[in-house]
Image (tube, rainbow, N blue to C red; front, side, top):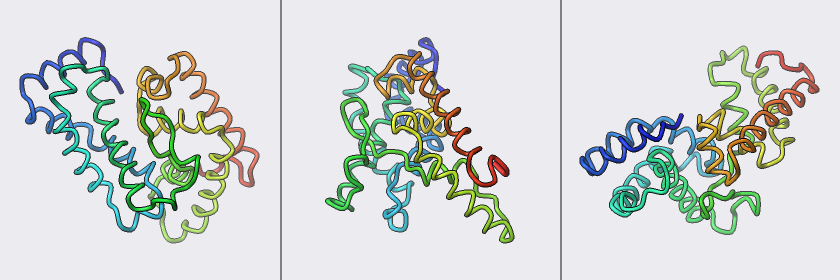
Length: 212
């Protein structure tokens, strides 16, 4: 989750004092969360040829180039700044590899006046169910996966995005609100509504909430 204002100020102070060494440490600290974001948002057609680690590596080079400019005017918390560059790099790679074959108008959502690939319903469903499945459970999991994905598709895009930010990327209410460009209260309502709607959609499907 995000830091208090005093913790954020301390992180910025450390970045100014330690430069690229501290940046590497900070990036390592948040690497798992950033990788989860990439896994949620990478187009399925790229998963066989592009590893999330490659995206993070390229994004780190972008961050290193932008560090001085960021420290002169840090409008974002350090974590959201890291996330912004990872999102930008993922978008660039999508456009490079897919071009006109991108998924259409719904592919990207607003992110600080930039664009970021949406969290896919399939990726959200897979993360919700987890990956620990024995061979004998594989068929049952595949069936549940389709049900959860269908339920995710039943959410409004902004509610699905709120769910992705809070539940899967583990952003705080303040962070999610800043990313979505809405108030904290509105972001909290979106998240709660998304959870409730998802539960209703799943309960109405064959098998209900069994196994989730």
